[in-house]
Length: 497
Image 1 (cartoon, rainbow, N blue to C red):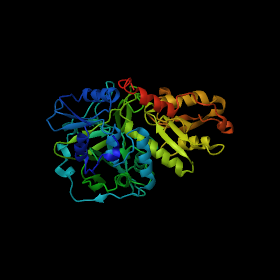
Image 2: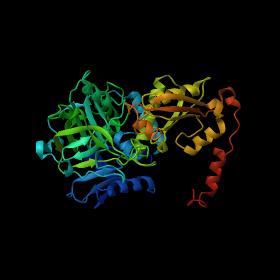
Image 3: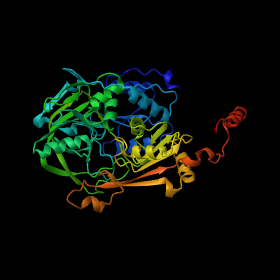
Image 4: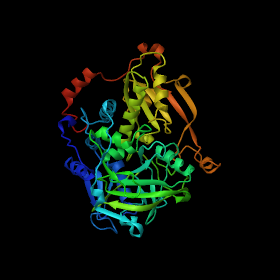
């Protein structure tokens, strides 16, 4: 179906969004699953093995919990759900059309500040003190080797910079420690981590709010590399074309989403840590410290807010392909936007492959215009804001290659790239605590376990510029002959082609 013919009306909150997803035929309600491994396992199997589009999965009547205490998985794992979330008009329901539409939006949008309101559904239940019990929600244990249950996997951690006052939202995993405490794992270099370190350097408590079941556009934005100094509230408002409504958190005084499903407010005390993890991460490994826990700050929860019949939003990171479709699309669009703004002309496509967890294997296609054009594109894409976090392999291909087709990309690498001239290696680049290529010994040794690095390869798989106009002809059925064949033989092969 041409998605321009499909009317996506604006939605107010997650529940409104789910109503529209159900009308699209992309919502599956699952009743009776268990929070211990079963919900996460079902989500992983469906996401990886579904024939056709994998639906969003809304779990209800979860074991040990009353009806109406729900959990949502696989939220954004389709073109139509992403188009609904960002109100995109697409010519075709495919990956690159979605990337182009996102890129076009990024190129024209104006930041929209959040709108303060006095009331919101998040205030339907407000609990403080000893009455707080986070086990009232069906918090899943996601993977068999996880160290516990994780409250925060598809959420927004809200923080404020103590120097400049701007508000950041990031998706940082939160393990459930107890009825009123959670862990807070923040990778070095993340804006929230920088804010945390500023507070800790001053021996001051670090106040945070953790919002679950937020507007899907806000959740998506919180996973991306939004520029420092720009709040994800402003960015998400620009993507939607309308402001995100917020109200002041009763304990932290941070702006919290007025229509979120669940919000916890609390603070971390400098120097106080607890064993956290392990947790199966986005690259498909237990790569933070293998199957051993790590020490992470503790969030002491002071206020709990939630809607009646709350929906806990969850992500199920695992071996690709899986849950990261929306991240691949949006990160591709952001890299495309950033390299064009850095002066790279004639970019024809960008795709961050699912096999690389949306970060590790990124492909750029260009129409070569001058000597060094392909190297320029690769180097900038590997180091731009949205590509610098690990971004291990950046491949640049000519514009006849479909960047989203891994077979096409490997064909270009294998046939057009002489390794001696095609590969550039950059050392001591930004890595991650979840980087599976960093030795466990390296992560466990030294006084600064966060000081890990990766090398990066930029692979120029374009035809050499010097003789690109004399490149060898490609062997394949031409478009005119293909059309003739399909016209004549369509009925014979209707169940095959």
